[in-house]
Each structure stands twice: as structure tokens, then as C-alpha cells.
Image 1 (tube, rainbow, N blue to C red):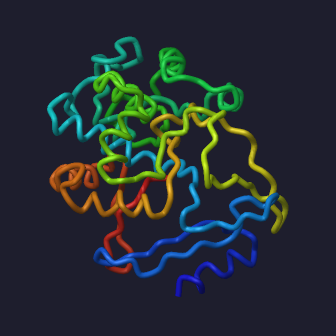
Image 2: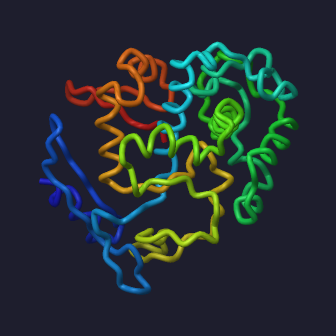
Amino acid sequence: MLKDIVSPYLKANAFSGAILAARNGQILHREAFGKANISHNIPVTPETRFHIASVSKPFTAVAIMQLVERSDISIETPLTDFVPDIVNANQITIGHLLGHQSGLPNINLHPDYDKLSKIGVSLAELIEIFRTYDAEFEPGDRYQYSNTNYNLLAYIIEQVTGMSFGEALRHHIFDPLAMAHTLHDDNPTKIIPDLAEGYSPAGLDGLEKSPYLDWSIKTGNGSLISTVDDLYKFDRALDTDQLISQDTYRLMVENSFGLYRSELEGHQLVGQLA
């Protein structure tokens, strides 16, 4: 059945990747399609690593909620405790950041974003940019997706743990779950085995290499690399108390803290807000 779903996309040269489907803790289907590197004719395998982009956000959210469970912070902790000179910092809470309700503009819309995404930028440098922002609405007034929120959450994780963002996630999430193929991409010179090349559409059915991107600008909101097997481990852990309690997990889903809930044909879906 999965092959039937994927087949039209493969014929249109519109999909290359790995799929894992499971039910009740049992893997039903695990298969890879397409090329990880077209130039060298390297096929995708289930062990291929991919940049997972915004699927990184649930990891950041879980790391924050671990700190909440340890009473290091709360979802009501104001941003001013960490960055006092950002607009509305005394009103923006960690909960507002988690649920995209801070009112802060999206870093992706910054006029210099394309340039910054090619030269690399630290969280401290991003904070300096955020200090120049004006609010787009009052904190908590409404939902507006903004990658800025998750850059700030990564910064908070670093301040509270005393570790870099990547080290904190490795120590508190990746290592406990034996996610040996997952990491934070903060060094463009690092050689990462089994990493897929990125491609973009070219014409109706062609492909071309995606523009260069230094993933450090996406720290916290889109900077992780992983595999289908490691993502499955993370998914299973959320249904247990391995990382956070089930009460905390329900709180995340109900408030769209890095995750969201919807329904399809009577079935509950939990996924990442794109």
C-alpha cells in the first residue's frame, strides 16, 4: 500500500527518502526510495541521514519541558529572565515561545536572512538581531508561526543547562534513547557519514542541488539531522515516561508546544507544525 502511495511521486521525480510505518510498537514497513546523492549514484537506505528541518522543533520543546519538570523553569517564566532587552520580554513567557504566541517576527523574513544563512550565525548574534525587533502583536493574543521563538528556546536551554544546544540534546535525549545517528548540525566543515544531499525542483520533473545553507541559523528550530529509525525511537519514547511524563506530553499536544493534534477520518494525528 505504501508503495502505491509513493509511486506517483517517484515517477514525477518528486520524492526521495525513507519511510517507516509502525502500529502498536511493531514496525510494519521500512523502505527507502530514490537517491541520497545523484552525482555519485548513491541510493537512499533506511540508514540514510537527513536534515529534518522543522521536525527539530519537538526535540527543542521536549528539552524545554524536561527543564520544566525539573523545576528549573516554568512555562510562565518570562523571557526577561534570559533576554531582558527584547520587546515585550517581560510579557513573553516560555509558553508563548513554545506555542508561537510571542508576537516576535519570524527570523526567516529578516531582509538579511539569505546572507546570514550562508555565512553562519551564532545564537548570541541572533539575539542581537531580535533586540531590534518590534512586536507584531501582544504576547498571547494569537498564534503566528515564527522560527524566532525556537531560536530563543535553544538559547534558554543553553543558559539553563550550561551546555551548548547540541550537547544538551545529546545528553538529555539522544543518548538516553540510543539515537546514535542524530545530531545538531552546527559545523558546516564537519564530515557527516551517510548524509543525503539536498535537492530542489528544476522544471516539471528535474532536480538541482539546493542552495548552500549553514544550518547554525536554524539552531533550535530546524538544525537537526536524523534517520527514520532514530525518529521512530523518539516517537515511541513520547508514549512512555522515558523523556517526559505522559501528563507533560499531553500538555504539549493540547497547547501545540512543538506538536499539534488533529483528526483524520476519526483517527487522532499528532505531528509537527510546518
